[in-house]
Image 1 (cartoon, rainbow, N blue to C red):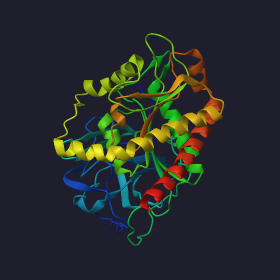
Image 2: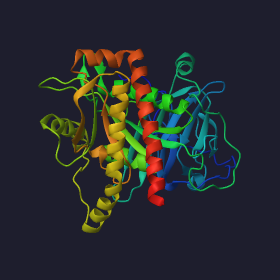
Image 3: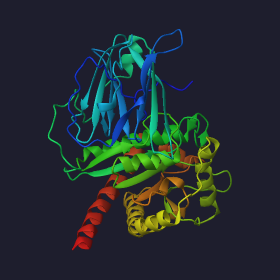
Image 4: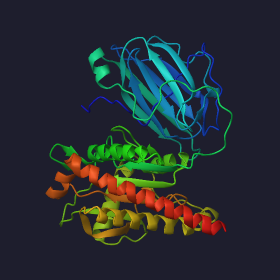
Length: 408
């Protein structure tokens, strides 16, 4: 049994129609699909609440719980609440629901106040690749006071409550970089396994810590493609990055090789032909989980779409290469272990966004005892994360200067 979830990427908004909704103070990315949205009591005898939300498109979001009173807080980037159906949220278990804008710019928020403590049990998301619409589900199950308190708390840097209505503002105006971190694998796909350790868990821990390190600089907004042990299809990870307005997408892994030896960090960029046989095998391994889940990873671009994406990649590829080189240089400057060939290329699906500079970072190989020891060491992780923060921010400065020159 997987451990209970505190924070979940894919969650669901509920709203009690008796409460007036705050006017949305910004241009929303997604709208509620009314006919796909409902909240009901859980079918099992243990009680609980099942919520389903239809969205016009996937958007990143985060979930956390707060005590005194018992609350589940859901932040979306971003959702317009106009489509919530009449009476939505009027079920036993929910004392009240508020929805509006979060204090963090560019985020929507809803707060579910509970009649008794409940924790998330199931979080899932389905995306219709033909229409781009999404349907998400959150199942809450009863929990004891102690269990709820153990998993509750405000994430660093956030303010509680619903923000007052604000004048509309177009786009991001604070100048912060938007970085999407993609912890590989999750849910039915644990990735590499060594003893009691799974790649999915290790890279999620690393990504959460890296996100906080980036946020503490005050120069970056960070979104994770998953914040719990849930399965996220590879194409959806790219969609979430695009919905977040990502300036960069960094997918994080810690693989294991069945044959041969490898150690140290490696940074990959997209190429149809892999740098070597090991890179090709890793790309196949990463994509296999989606194939098993019934996701068609074949490219189906028509001629016009292909040309447009080629044009977009003509600008994006050099930027991704520069990001990869910057990360390698920063890791080397931090005296941290690098692979003998730290810059590689492969056809990873998660790197196929034509409009977002994307890299895949292997922080090390679980098949190497030294690398695994490092990944489990909090002090090593702090050093690696500091190097990555420096590399990302240096790249952002150089990338901004390059963009200014191009505009001139």
